[in-house]
Image 1 (cartoon, rainbow, N blue to C red):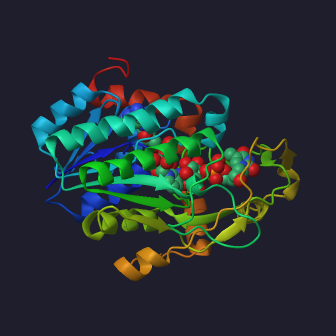
Image 2 (cartoon, rainbow, N blue to C red; image 1 turned 180 degrees about the vertical axis):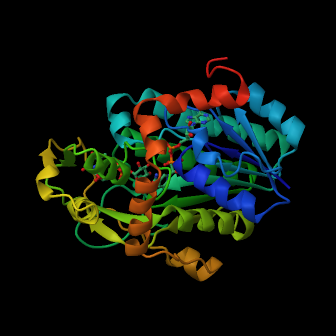
Length: 339
Ligand code: NAD
Ligand code: DAU
């Protein structure tokens, strides 16, 4: 079995590959990743020497390359992780988000339909549902109502995937997960940014009043949900994924400071994110009842493991801060990133 996996040098894709290629030695995974600022091959050191793992540098916008890969590997499945993923960046400039997240996804859909696949799994997000008030949760039937350019681009991609399912009988399935945390998360996102700033004695910038709520899940639990949906999910269905761990941002920031023995005077309340969604909370009962998935790692365990990981892997994040991680591709493949 051959899988085309896109965006596998990012946070969730690399955690998925490290888990999946170790477990399924007979399944070949080809990781197509453009290595944008968010792509880091150092996340994949555990997988790079495995026989069932291949890396290809390239874009999901490059139809010719994707066709060549389909001809060569005759993929059975596609898992599309590739995306521009950071909300703040989408506010500064939305074009790369619409290009990769929408046109990139439709390019992949076109080629996968042309060559035929058993299954196309689109990795989506709970942000497509918009923002909640104080009560309630997102279910799969909640109307999509995205608020940021990032979530609008992900919602558009989801609609393109479902349109292919309805129009062409294309074998697609979608997962919509809540906020992930864990090893290898790029230090622009809340949890790694706060851990690293605290370790460096820098201020911890909390947007607005710090009371925006996110529903957190350890990345390995998300990886296992994707594995299950890939093998057992029903075509044409959407599966929400979350671990019932709603937390206001300020609580997380304070937890990190106390775990690192740092004082709360490092906290700095800053101007709010424009259009900042107030609360996300996800109802995962469908994937739990229909596929038997459930999260295995509690928030307390996951946060302890994550904080320890950043303490023990200082070189990993220092090489990002000083941009040395960008040279790893050249060292491994003897080509420059542009070449
Ligand atoms: P990330 O930003 O860490 O990684 C994205 C990866 O995609 C990078 O390796 C990047 O190089 C690659 N990429 C970007 N543009 C590309 C292109 N045109 N062609 C090929 N590769 C390209 O993102 P992440 O946090 O790992 O998220 C992965 C997926 O999961 C995304 O689709 C995101 O929307 C979704 N998601 C993320 C979360 C979360 O909490 N991080 C939650 C739910 C869903
Ligand atoms: O819900 C899933 C989504 O979670 C994914 O689809 C996105 O790809 C992922 O980036 C994430 O989006 P968020 O915007 O929720 O994540 P972020 O880490 O950027 O922010 C989490 C919360 O913390 C949010 O309320 C904004 C706040 N925040 C964030 C940063 C970076 C701060 O208060 N200060 C900060 O410096």
